[in-house]
Length: 350
Image: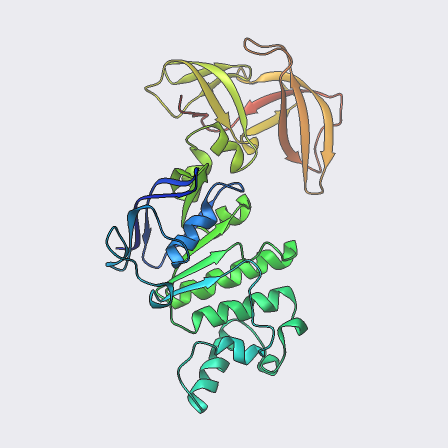
């Protein structure tokens, strides 16, 4: 069952088209991540779901209730949708407890019990209840904002880049904590981010936007392995994209002869490999693959990124590739190596 349904959403600001024909289904209890570069329309779409913006055309429904269509729109405060913005947006004149309990109608002991329960759920110590927002760290402020949103027992939680201002280590820890919390509560969640690794690790469903359009959606691993086009491939991570000639399930390219995942494709095409599919060795015993020379070695501890220049091939003379290798056994610059591939190359759409 789908909790949220978006159907043919269009939105313009003056002559600028912000969203174009957006249709998306969000399964109940899932975590959907909308990812894309700045200006792709992802925050506009999130604000539209929240009720802060309204589409020019199209419809939006939540748990079978129509929130927006051509005849009416349910106001934001009646949608039972939680919203956590990038900066938390806590009320500076209210304590932590007052911020969390802002929308609660209960009074007296029941209110205090609910606030204490929410603080515990987001791993905030009870002694923080009387603190002011300026006395909290960035991570603590985001936990308060999340608790405040959860207080309303929302049908849907919207997260607008809530981890972007946090340090790298804290961002990862907060992301895992929030994912566990929302999953335990059974709350359907939509996260907007431009961080590819964050999107891939948090999502059950990933939706990639570009220039106001929904380019591709599906399981994160499927999008990473089988992107629709070169732009999507490069946005979701490092990728080796090169021209090839496809014949009978094999790609003939500057890396040699590689099996492809599209058995029905023949002729000229662009293929994609992820760097982790490339391996370097000092032996050319394998008939597949291609010889090359290591021109740079970027040591990163347990892994090492090598720049390998291939010998002149059919399509491009002296192509350089990035290859990841074990930091302990990475060959030095100047080494002659043999590059082979793992698995199948993905054939990109024309």
